[in-house]
Image 1 (cartoon, one colour):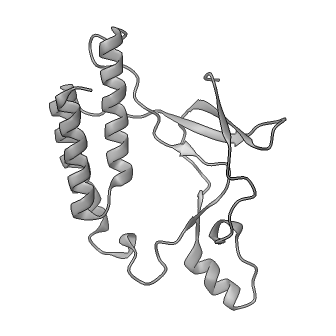
Image 2 (tube, helix red, strand yellow):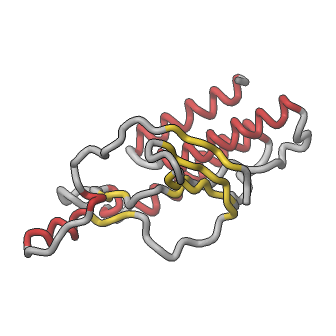
Length: 175
């Protein structure tokens, strides 16, 4: 790993620690810088303009969003979007110093799904990104309020452990 890449990691960590925010943005920059470094070392991309890392991993199950509970969640603050914009700009400047370019649009995502024959395996596939029309997170505060009124809650907001804690992942080529 190059010294510049180590500097990028350090800058990202310091921004995340200072803002207590933006770790998802930082991981995208680190993953893309690492991919760019691998492509250059392997000689597969002499220009530095190769494939970007996937934008995110689409989960198999709903995810509980506990951020609004307690009344002081990050996205409840009026400065939340401004903070994330500043994180994005700072991290892109650091990425530019390491790679000599801005972060290219990320047009792929990884989709996680259950393996057909083995319940303790997860299949991962790389897909072209298209805007999601379905929210992947459940608002646990809203669900908690519904439960207090006698309405059933969502599994994503449960504190119960999953049935299986030990999974194997298998990656499948693009479709």
